Picture (cartoon, rainbow over the protein chains, first blue to last red):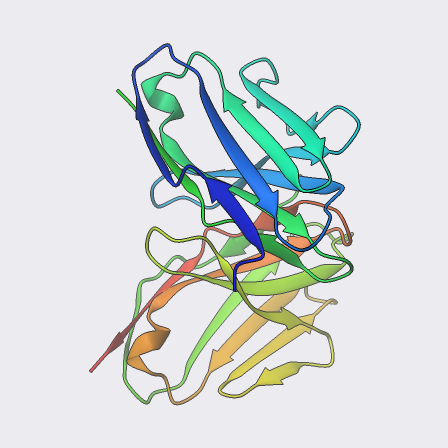
Length: 114
Length: 110
């Protein structure tokens, strides 16, 4: 069964609005979670590392004021796309490492900004 | 700069054939490598880890060559259900983010 959930799975919004995406680890605690973005026919690109109890670390070129990350608890990280624009339309996926195993991915959130 | 390079394909292969993918990585500090499978419009799912000693799981065999910074995946007796995009992935290890290749698109034809 799924070990990481994401909500919503799909969202359509108007340009200028903000969208919040939740990522939850199920049955395990994750002090670290990762947020990726995938444009059509492109690879997944790491956007940021979400750290429970401290600030997220962002990859080069990712605007921290636009993509707000909050790691509220050991099982929940949220990504808020602020003032979304059509170029933010993408597939957003979170992942969480469980122990020493590799990472488990959420099912992804497909964002379409009109 | 972390990079993982793959041939994007597509690889069109008849059912039952053997197919091999390769990828190269540029970050010699990468510690762990994986092959993920991603179906259309879905999240990637771990297929197998890659070790220098080789790793075999049923019809799938993965190999890591650290000297050449080269990773391979071999699929024997391919099935229609093997059609997907195969992502070569590197990691600094532990709680590091993953670096993905762009993926190799495989199409198994009946």
